[in-house]
Amino acid sequence: MSETAKLVLGEKTIELPIIKGTEGEHAVDITKLRSQTGYITIDNGYMNTGSCTSDITFLNGEKGILRYRGYKIEDLAEHSNFIETSYLLINGVLPTKRQLDFFNEKIVSFATLPSGITRMLDTFPRDAHPMGVLSAGVAALSAYYPDFLDHDLSDSEKDRAVAQLMAQVKVMMAYFYRRAKSEEPVRSHPSLGYCADFMNMIQYKPGYEVDHEVAKAMNVLLILHADHEQNCSASTVRMVGSSNANVFATISAGIDALWGPLHGGANQAVLEMLETIKKNGGDYKKFIKKAKDKNDSFKLMGFGHRVYKNFDPRANIIKKACDTVLTKLGVQDPLLDIAKGLEEEARSDSYFVERNLYPNVDFYSGIIYRALGIPTNMFTAMFVLGRLPGWLAQWREQVGSPTAKICRPRQIYTGPGVRDYVPVDERK
Ligand code: SDX
Image 1 (tube, rainbow, N blue to C red):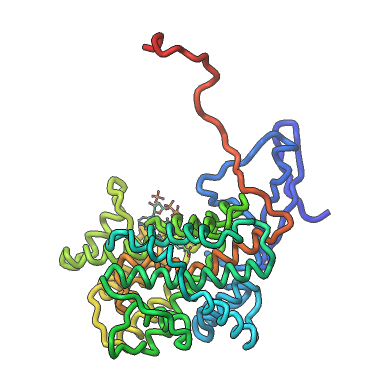
Image 2: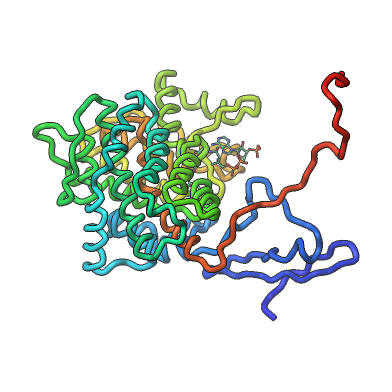
């Protein structure tokens, strides 16, 4: 028999199978716990609970390791591009030239939106938060592609859904961004490549040309954001997808979960925090003090991570890219100096060191987005664009699994015991 864990409950002892991962992680499989003992487990915030096995992303929080389908994030950031990495996440292998060209062509073929969707985008206030627009817009796509509502999609239909969403989310973002600035939309120019085309669609004005460094930086940023195993929004995608909801509803739910400032919304919150510190004379030590004060709800945004209890490898790459991109673009940003000072101060402060709180992916990313001319309220939408292939890979892995079940956690009830109904005129 494979390795097991013994659980002693009163007079009863049961053995539970141990599952081992590729990199030696261990899990106790409690699938049969309730049927054999009547007990369930409880784990606030799922800090110790695995929801699935997955072949997509491996991360080791203690060692600061992040790999997509076995490839190191550092190698992909240096050598790959966002569409190639998206193909890798979704299909499990690096594409041949032919496969990559075909994937690109498929994405390009969906580079327009149904007119009803653009009309809907036009009904939003120009200053609406892009995350609300994106969530609504993606869910609304289900009204225009009813053939995707049948949850038993064939593999080729899933491939189409992937390419369509990779294309239409980008177009939706660019359309709404231009509308927010009262500028006419710019159509896609596929020959530019996905990231350069996106930059052109949002920044174009006569004479504008996408800077090669800007396109490269955008590719690196989106690669770094592309997947992160069972984070809050990916778990939401799996939760919603497990009910066989259509892919548009499933991805829209992922967008909603990512919006929270404890998750993807942190990149916008970091910039707002740095701006506030700047307005306070750059006194970041005062904010370190606030973050440590248990009576103050303020947290150092962009710091800390559920899994990384050492450094977040993405933060290291983005921090280096900050210097390169801002220098290449000739941008001087005082917020970068404040961010570096804040990091240095926190890293030498026992409160942060004892709690393993280090900069995460969101701490420096906003500074690059700002240098690329992306407005702060679009930062989390940029996280959506990056994370989309990861969500789609997680969705495909789950809906394609023969053992997939609807996600329905149990609970321990702590409310009132049974009591009789009292007619309203007898209540005190
Ligand atoms: C992302 O999961 C993923 O993979 C997410 C992500 C991805 O790619 O999908 O990596 C993207 O969401 C990154 C995280 C972005 N969020 C932020 O930067 C918001 C600020 N960070 C925190 O809110 C917090 O660190 C979390 C939410 C990220 C993690 O929270 P946990 O794991 O639930 O940890 P916790 O809140 O229980 O904190 C443990 C201790 C507590 O102090 P004590 O009660 O032990 O005294 O550390 C403290 C916390 O108060 N703490 C912080 C802090 N983060 C944790 N104190 C001050 N500032 C912070 N940022």
